[in-house]
Length: 344
Ligand code: 5GW
Ligand code: MN
Image (cartoon, rainbow, N blue to C red; front, side, top):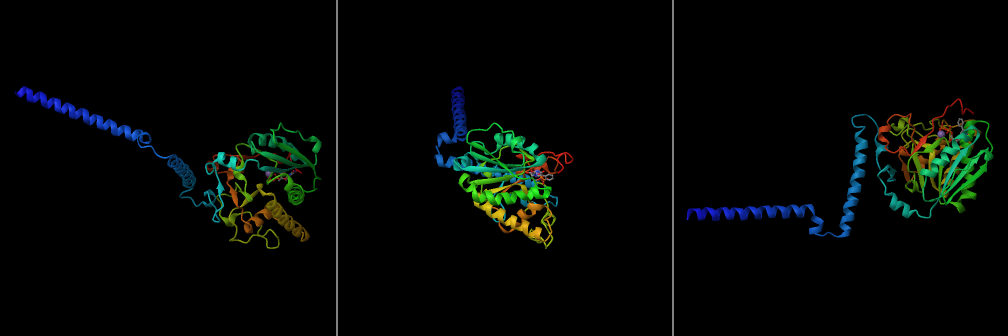
């Protein structure tokens, strides 16, 4: 009798044990394969991946800010939005597939000046542009040089055009750099409106080193100077002499932008170049020249005409600068110059 009871008890605990194991297994399965057991709608899945993407942007943004925690650096340039709600473009803030579709068929111009010894920078720039700049889109290179015959045409993908224009080399290098504004006033009015939608203006002593695509397009776009992105506004290299038309008073201005990369819709660059050229001419009348030539005029313009999109220093970097740890993608790099060799 007793043996029977014992047997029955053992059998019962065996059944209960098996049941518990089975229930646990079922629960585990439900947790592991929740979307199979409780199918969720496609929309919800997309929402979650979007949430994930947003979170990772937020995290990257925090990570960048954390790098300067406890130090008296200014953090505004590390954000992903300006105070006037223009996006600041960092890696991870955009989806290139979505943007490439959105800008499908858009015509983009790249404006560069290469006179005198700077002709040596042209070929590497154009070759790197073929690898990284607006790949898959319609691109026209507007090259201005005093040595049209010396230009080596790079192998170009379909849909890409090289326009070579002759330009006289100014006597002073400062004038070469500023001459770009005058040329822009002409081309953005006469020719470019029929040829392109957006224009990107760049220095020639640079190379593309990573992706630079349609994420940089906007009505009016400027790049944060890599030497000033952590600087306080008082330290910005704005023209501070009241006598110059490029004057920016202390207390004004958000970022110090670099003239080595800016752009926008053709009519916006027309307005910008007209304003800057006017300032340059006015200053010349008074025998003055802004501290950083056309860059000073560009900065003055952008204080009062806020860019609709701001590019982080990923879009202009120089490997000799400090704080490269903030810059994961060095997309557009300054070429090291032997200043003696390229002296004007
Ligand atoms: C040459 C010596 C000193 C300064 C400028 C030049 C120079 C500039 C030149 O001989 N030829 C020329 O085409 N430029 C154009 O002006 C290039 O497009 C160049 O990228 C741009 C700005 O001059 P950079 O690059 O020397 O200015 P930073 O601020 O990069 O030093
Ligand atoms: Mn340069």
